[in-house]
Length: 543
Image (cartoon, rainbow, N blue to C red; front, top):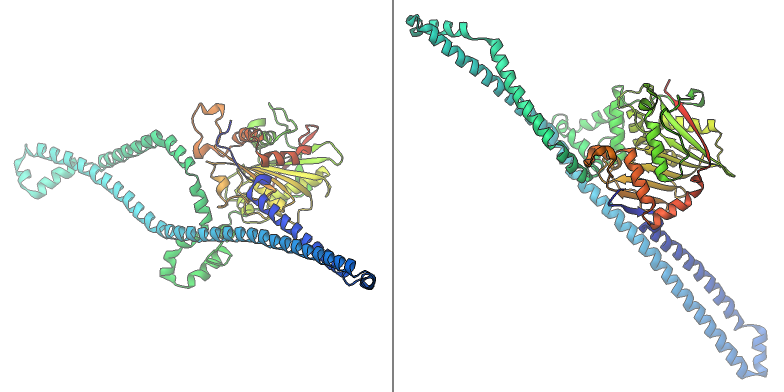
C-alpha cells in the first residue's frame, strides 16, 4: 500500500471553500436587492391614498399603521444593509486571499529565477574548470606512467653501462642507453593501467552508494520543481557569457535561434525556446497529424487478459498494459496502442486510455508517443499522438455529446490534459485521470472533473514547476511511491517512482482512504466504472 497519502483540491480543498464563499456572496447580493425592493414596496403603503383618507375618520389607528409601516421598512433596509455588507466582506476576503496567494507565487517565481540565473551563468565556467581537472588528472596519469617507464629505463641503462663505464660518463652515451631501454608502448600501458584503476574505483564507489543516492534524490525530488519553475532564469544564465562577448545583440541572435522572444520570462516560453532551438537543427519535429485512415488493428496482447476497468487502479493497470507492446506480443512494435472502453448505457460512456512515451529519439519516428510528442505537448502545441487519439475516438463513433473520460500515465496524462484544455477538441470530456503527468499549466475548464496522482519521488510529475490548481473540480493525490514485489524490499527512489504499476497501487490506496475530495470525484465518475462494456484497441503510426 502507498504511504504518506495527502490530498489537495477537490470538493474538500481550499479552492472549493473559496468557491463556496463566492457563491454565498452572490446569494447575499441577490438577497440584498430583494430586501431593498420589498422595503420600497412597503414604504409605498405609508402614502397609500386610502390610508391617508382614513386618517380623518380614525387618526389614532392611522398613526399606529404608519408607525408599523415605517418600522417594517426600516427593518427591511437594516436586513438589506447587513446582507450587503456580508456579501462585500465575503467577496473581499476571497479576492484578498487570491491576490495574496498570487503575489506570493509571483514573488517566489522571481526569487527562483534569480537563483537559477546565477546557477546557469556558472555552468559553462564550471564545465571548463571540471574539464580542466579531468584533463589534469589524465595528464597526471600519463606523467606517472611515463615516469615509471623512465625509472625502469634508467635502471636498465645503469646496468648496461656497468659493462662500459665510459658510456655512463658521457651524457650522449648515457642518453643512448636510456633511449634504447625506454618503451613508449609500456609507458602508455602504465598510464592506461593507472587510469583504469581510477575509473574502477569510481565505478565501485558509485555502485556502493548508487541506491543511497537514488533514495536521497527521491526524498529531495522537489528540486525538480525549483529547476522547472526557474527554467527562464536558467536558460538566460546559460547564455550570459554571450552578453560579455556580443552585448545587446545577443537577444536578437537568441530570438533567431529559438524562434521566440529572448530572454524567456515564463515557463511556457522557456519550453518553446528549447523546442524551437531543437527544431532549427531538425530535432523534436512532431510531424503531421494522424487521421482515421492511418489507424489499424494492432496485434493482440498475448499472455494477459483485457478487462473493463472498474476503478482508478484498474485504469492504471490498463495503462501499464497498453505501454508494454514489445513485451506482450514478442514483437518490436513501433506504434501507439490507444484503448477505448465503451461503457453500456444511455448514453454510452467512453474511457479513452492514452499510452506513455515509448521512444526517446530526438527525431520523430513511426511511434507517435515519443520524446517529440512530449516536448510539443509541454510547449502547448498540437501533437501527432493527440491527433491519433481524436481519430480513434471518431472511428469508435463517439458523438459530441457522449460523456468521455481521458486517462493516461506520463505522456498519456499530458496528452489527456492538453486535449481537455483544447477548445478545438469537440468531444464531451467530463473527466480526466492522470498519473505522473505534469499538467498544472493547462487551462482545463472547471466543468471537467480531474484526478491527478503524483508520487512524491517522481521527477516527471514535477516538470511543470508548479503545483496543480486547488479547485473544486481538480483533486490531486500525493503519495510515497509504493513497493512492488519485484523490488525485494529496496526503495524505488527517484529512479523507480515513475511507474504505472506503482501508480496502480497508489490509486487503490487512495480509493479507500476516506478523503472527501477523492470520494466526491469517485462518485462523479461512477457511471464509467460499472464494469459493463467492451474494449477496443487502435494502433497508430506516423507515416
